[in-house]
Image (cartoon, rainbow, N blue to C red; front, side):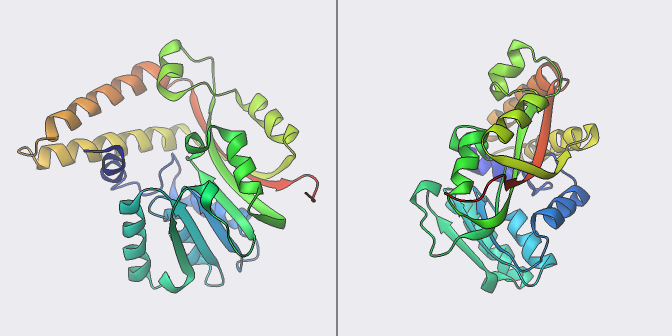
Amino acid sequence: MDREEISRIAHTDHPVKAPLGDDSVRELLRHALPRGDERVLDLGCGPAEWLLRALTERPGTRAEGIDLDAGALAQARERAEAAGVADRLTLHHKAAEDFTPEELFDTVLSVGAAHAFGGLLPTLDAARAHLAPGGRVLIGDGYWESEPGPEAVEVLGDFADLPTTLDKVSAAGWTPVSAHLSTRHELDAYEWSWLGSVANHALDHPDHPASPDLLALVTTRRTEWLRGYRDSFGFACLVLRRTHEGP
């Protein structure tokens, strides 16, 4: 079972692939889409949960998403049809660097996908290339709430603390206009949902050849979380505008 399929299983009950509750997502979209008629792009959209919520709650928006996971895009198309918003959603099965839109976007999203671009700042560079003047970026990535142990760094990578993260964002030419720091409840709820969805899938399909590996994965991730990064990892979503417009 490949990584993409495991991810789809893991997010069965938590379609937003980040430690955020529904109210937090709604509030972040309110700040990222202040007019309600924006053209929106999601870099690394997966099943396009952010775009589907934006399109459903803001009938004037139009959206495009990019992802390399064909299965996730198929899921997004199916859900868009069911929600009656498919006519306002365009999905692209390609790498972000191969995407050349005819128009720039009012809002660019990328939440929990920075690893695919090589980190937070490269993700912002990718977003900048598609952002119209006066536009906004909604980006979500991890940071260290406290000094991490070596196990946490090995599992998640080497983030910075929150002040350093914001210093880097500002130095790259961005000004935060809104933000959300995931609460302990959101962080824990996300992990339990991930673990529970994978465990339930394995237990519901005991004869599937992948089930023992899925249960082993649950045990490994639970240990990494509780004994590794739970006390040090944080997640921040930032709504950003360019400090200075222009090339």
